[in-house]
Image (cartoon, one colour):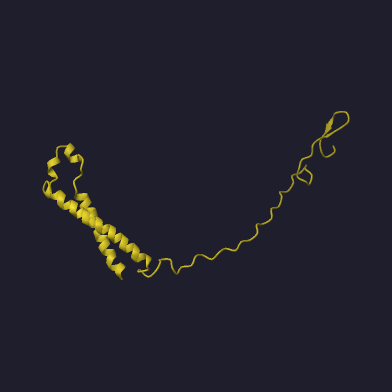
Amino acid sequence: MLQMVLSPVYVLTCLLLLIVVLLQQGKGGDIAAAFGGGSSQTAFGARAGATVLTRATTILGALFMVGALALSIIGQRGGAGGSVVGGVEGPAPVPQTAPAPVTPPATPPGQPEGGQPQAPEQKPGGETKPPGGM
């Protein structure tokens, strides 16, 4: 139950921190200052705005870190009712079967049953005759 209360507060803290960081003026030169619009970025005044936004950033940053730590500790204890996949079983294991025996390819005509071509036979006179006896 505590996690259901802290989660929306944490999300709100994150959104506020995002807005405060985006409202701050950068330390370096902005693109508006390059085109002559440098003085138009004084929404809260020159110095007071930086102080308010800096303090808000510090406080929201601390809340962000504490909230993340608190939610992770509550989540480890099982505050949300356990894991998302706690009661789900995986797929049934597939039984292993032996691979099918490999049959040799049929021998093409002109080759003996062993599958290896024969070397031509040599006659005593140096002539060769093709395999098969012709």
